[in-house]
Image: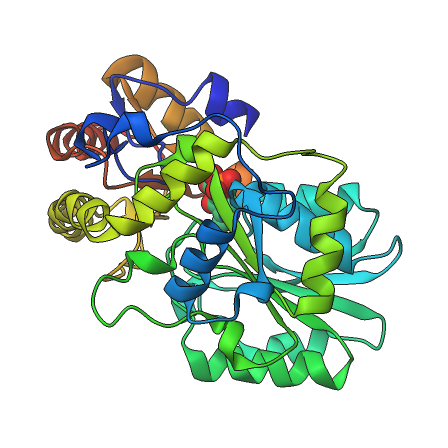
Length: 351
Ligand SMILES: Cc1ncc(COP(=O)(O)O)c(C=O)c1O
């Protein structure tokens, strides 16, 4: 996160994971209808109901949060006691690992491997689970690879978790980037599923911090009470704008979709032409996670930045230093030139 805030930018910035910002002026709202203060002690009912309708769940299962980041923190902190075993995918989005460690969990890992398309192997999860496991954590779509985990696999993970009395936390912040036949939330798969998400990554309104957790009402209440520590009251303007963003969600979604799909076409051509990298290509998502076949990815990315003014995320942030992550969905002209420059850098890469 620190690297991303301080060092990721470049003229051709492919170190992204979310889509282009949606401009405020294009949101069809009357600014005079906004208000600074509201009556919303444990969630703003219109927003809570809007999220509930969007996800097809009861409103008392919805906990508002400041983005998926706070959602993941509240969810994990409400479930985990120090010393509990938490099973987290590898590779993983760093802040999920950091949060579990901050909560003094005993973190164990199950592997997703490239040869299997980064898919979750339930047999591997079964091997890793113990009676001390309290929580299994998954991202769907997976960050950094955008691999999609289908419902039958999630069900199996749910069954494995249940056999140990554990819960499954699924971070679905990228799920809506499956634009055709968008899967329903895994919250429907049973009472031991907890889901986190937000409008930040796929809808271009990160600044609204419109995030949420889906959990059974008793755990949801615990999360709201925990949030009292961090946020006495939410930012009401943000809540109003969150409701407005949901009202025009198709507009936000289609704008981003056009860019993501154009970028994906370019990515596929780029990946097909390269002999110095291997990559699992997906039909969805905003990221790709190629492996550099020769040489060190860190020094490659350094050269990519200094000689080619292009950035991508080093795989070491996902504990896979041979890889790097490329992001789509911001600006197709920039993406085209960015992958062109990566091609040129790869062509001159010395093993
Ligand atoms: C898997 C995952 N979860 C959560 C987040 C943070 O989301 P938010 O901006 O909604 O806090 C990110 C951001 O990159 C992410 O990749």
